[in-house]
Image 1 (cartoon, one colour):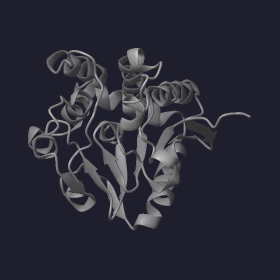
Image 2: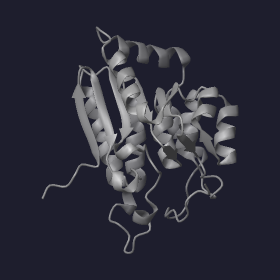
Image 3: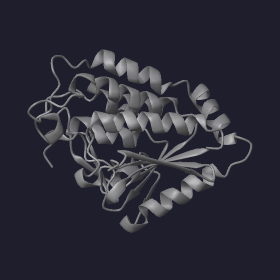
Image 4: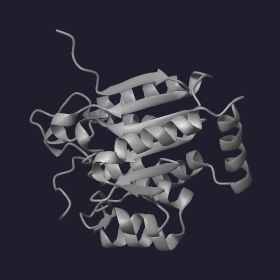
Length: 247
């Protein structure tokens, strides 16, 4: 029996749809899924017909964060020793993506899962959706969330999201310019698909040209911020998360 992929990739009409595919775990993160995410993003970027990426989650939720049950299994899973490399590969692939990324934020994006939403260039969120970075409150650094926040937003936005560890509702995220549009919950995926299709239909590779130009003009390279975030917020010892954020 063939196992279901942990990330679905489909390419049509200028749009690569990259879908996290662990709906039974609300798309909770495990390193093998991140390996597939990196491979899907690399494949999308290498296809010159692709002008936009739609990043979404299967089953009506974006990402519930790290899969704590999997990380704390006994015996430890075989990917435990390479989990950091898998996360790095996924975020580096997001940073290197040469086309705009549209995120469909359904229900929630939590902790490590929030970083994948924040990596998007444009986020469409449901009216009851929320984002939470509770890592500091748990006593953990939040390097990838800090990397993407510092790439895109002022310090005041990062402070509210990271220091409080609270659920930030979609309306507040839109007021902070983190979210592009807030729509009815049932309309998130169709609206994000339509936005990605609008970008994906741009002719002459202009979406790639403009994204490259925008990064050059603003002078902020997400790959550099990712590396700096790892340097200033090192994780020491064996990383085995044991607690969910307070929600």
